[in-house]
Image (cartoon, rainbow, N blue to C red; front, side, top):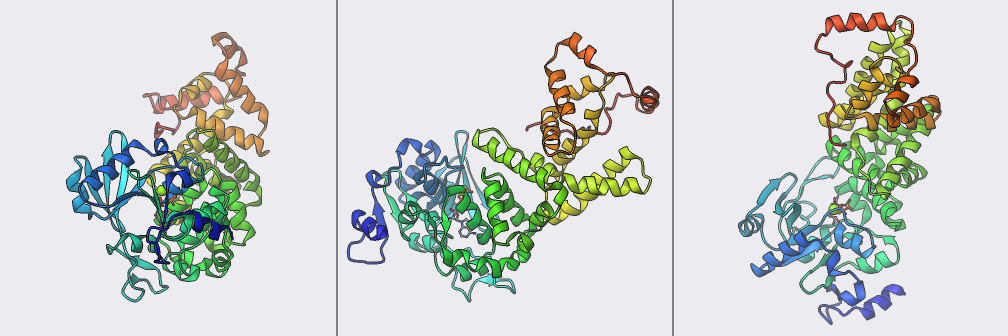
Length: 452
Ligand code: ATP
Ligand code: MG
């Protein structure tokens, strides 16, 4: 009904051609040109002046329509990557799954991709489960729209005319709060199982209901996720967890019985009864930070997600009479070794995770010089945030967290008075360690990386 109405309101680009795209003018769609990034406008103008078609496309148009702040702006064009590169001084062709061009305008990076066509089902290179491995074929704008995943993602905004070109009624779907797949959802999931995850993420992010035709097959097709390369899965998973709607996304995945098998990471997260509370707290905390515009780091997030694995492994090692401190570090390596590989955690993120974990035992030392040294750690704040989550989940006493907050904000005299007497044997131990490491090492946390 609403769709019919909208169709009446929006002037058709090609009257008479019932399948032509809708052309939606600014006064109907409501996107203000000022909200579009300068760099994206510039890229479109230069391409258009060069004689090519060029539009802002995908997530940015969708988010602007939904009154959300776009993460980034992508441009789709009729120019080939080489033609794009020729028009810009700071442009680089990147070739992963397909060739795209990164254009730098000022400080902003715009991803420019050439209109692509969906390769004919039998012609595309696929794995034995039907997953498309390579579909790098250029095409028309209409074909480009057809190969995109959801109708709300197939919208083209022309900054010059300010019109939106809408081939699949994406604007109407967005207004009706529906996430609808372009084409047959089963076929599209088989081609690329990651679309199942995208459906849940985008539904949660935009408050859209997944069209039943697209949500129904997910349960039975979930196992296709097993064949997706870990690195690709990790990218999408990270987007989901850092979307600002992680709790909602994971709850939905769980409700639909999707957490099992859909992602190994979710099994890890949700199957530890002990850690479950901690994980939900940390996801709530991440969502809150995103909504406040505060930075969120994948390292911190994964440190929380895997912490209870570390605790379990640590306990197992201590039960075998290993000393507590080395056992903890060995447990960290065990967990990062197995999960790191399974989840395709990059080496940099693994380093960040370990930094945060390694700080935790140091919060227990409240005597001598140790607390002062800990405060100077570049990762102190992240470590303290982590400590606080541990306390909120009931793992440790909140008193420790409060002590550190007070200590961090206290003046010199007050700090001295807050210190506790060294525990028996602590002084002797430190002297021994100093002898071995005269350079003043600080207990195995040398790999701290800045840049939270
Ligand atoms: P986000 O807000 O997370 O950036 P997005 O929709 O922009 O969401 P991107 O991964 O940036 O996600 O993809 C850009 C566009 O490329 C999408 O809007 C969609 O049109 C298309 N696209 C991305 N992934 C797929 C896919 N797996 N299958 C088909 N089209 C896709
Ligand atoms: Mg995007």
